[in-house]
Image (cartoon, rainbow, N blue to C red):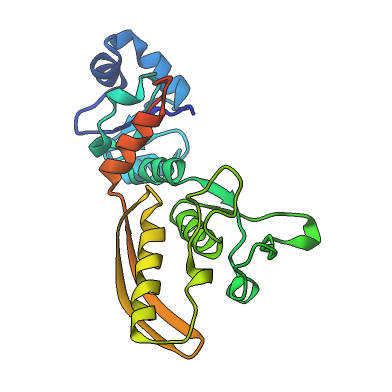
Length: 235
């Protein structure tokens, strides 16, 4: 995945001084204005000046791209912009086809014979995609609804909930709570899970859970650990 380093314009900056500091050669200022599609005078002092050529001028506080390739291990996660953090999070938390956007379509699922329906705009032939935190949410739902051991070569995937629903009693609720917690924590992207509320009445069980994902620092470490080629370009 190609990424590039971003630089925020500071007081007194010129393209030459930025090139000298970031690229090690003041003459590389030409690369900066070409890569960022800037036009003379490149960096201006006021918003009024910038307004004369919004797309091709920058000022204090604006960002330009520094075309430097580097390995992901060289990146300080504290230096990443919010958009970069979001993309790193999406990379680690993953993406998948959207299966669970509509609760009414999967609330009664949970046996080997049930198939969850794809979400999307069927009229145009589109299939929706989920990513990041929403992908983790969907993965947890799928894991809870899948009978433990029902997937070939994945004996530890799924939950044992389908075997737990017997005559309601307090001991059964404790077992179901524990199984939900255990199942959620088998997802390595989850840091902690806490039950906020649960109750059981007859054959009906309801509960509410708070799930905290790994911190961004841990997410970034996971990205580094999974990048075997260590080939990454910062943006």
